[in-house]
Length: 115
Length: 114
Image 1 (cartoon, chains in turn cyan, orange):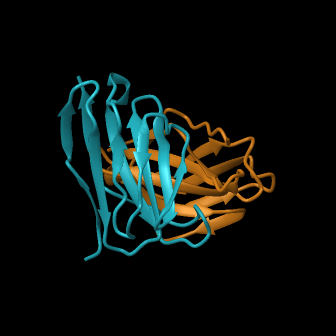
Image 2 (cartoon, chains in turn purple, yellow):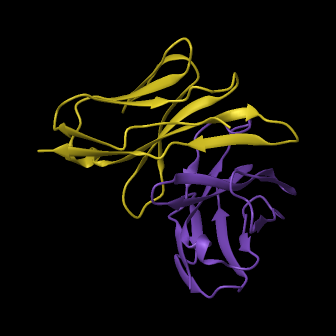
């Protein structure tokens, strides 16, 4: 069955370290998204991509970067982790050709703790 | 950037109809309205999407008035398994320089009581 996976599921790191969170989907969806979820804030969009070599900034992109070298993967990199980036991170994908319309399929999430 | 407002929490008894309203006063012309359900330690799951008027699927209905400044998710005859957090998502309008906006509400925690 097609699916979307995230790894690792849990990560503890130290302030200043570079961290990369993986996201892999097997639906062959063009659109992929990264969100962070914090208590009191709901889900906030970090970055998104509408296809290979396409990336765009979301609402809370500072301190994060993404790259899209193939259809299946959109890794999220924290260049220099900060305690404010402690959060649960969700990756999602969708097949909609209408930009952000359509159903997004979410991964199980990665819980990141920055000490 | 569209701002969305939802009630923080709601309680309902089993078998009742539940209506959750999301306010999005500055929704853009091309924005869609989408609702998601989330259980603890899981990613959100799509429920329903609409643009205007009423949309119905096998699990819910979505009511959108003509001015589109709010939307109401209706869950018929809820059961204990519907206890979850419900999010409205507004977005899709092109905001310039190749970017689109997606704004989730902060979520409504629905508790279904036996």
